[in-house]
Image 1 (tube, one colour):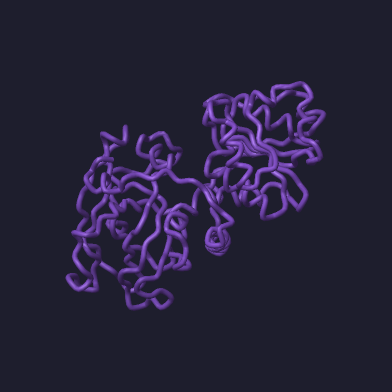
Image 2: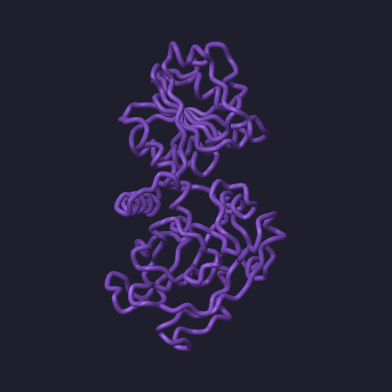
Length: 342
């Protein structure tokens, strides 16, 4: 059901009333992107007004500043994501905002503090969100908004996959497909920070040389198209780089097979997506003679405790502020969302 505690940020605050127009005990009314049934986002979503919400002593009301449209958000609306919120509900699972008001028992946050969710809570596609203080994580105000709004899914996934499956050390190598994705871009840069080599696989398409150049600038050691790896002696392409201990797969099909071929003896491939919608095929010899391990990763299932979550987020945003973690984000005319042109 539509939560009365959690108020997309239409990002259009010019028509909103000022703080003094509302009593401190309730939030301002909120504008939200809601869907009442699962289906195509352009037909089932609507923009609506949410009434003011009572602010109890432990609550914090946050004025949302930015919230991305993640592919997983679209899948949830379509009803094809493994976890489907009960409808009607408000869209969005990521975002950043500033503290607007709070209850009497809140002592660690102040007006204007920059915050993000410290847990995976739906409902960020609205102007105001009211949640318990324990669910908000204060971040440095100098953090670029676009990174603050998007750090808790793709960059966090990249970090956790690098840390949670294989004990990598400087000089080790990882291999990944889907290298142009935000996760892929983050993996390259996080690996570079740690002195870890990265081998990156991209699709065969026009402009691949430009894509290679961009990834190399991010810190990639080697970048290949899938067709360039379609050779018998694939390991001869690695030059002096050690064979990878860890492989990351978000595509499946032949792209996953290439990752497996590049892995060293006893290597591990982690699958976190299947963009090609094709199955993963692995040879019997890879199991018997290489002892390859296949694992899966789903961030929501990790159930990170608050301390680990906040530590990871702070680490990622510190890198972003230092210019050591960058990724390209598609920019939407946000005014369209305010006008219900989702």
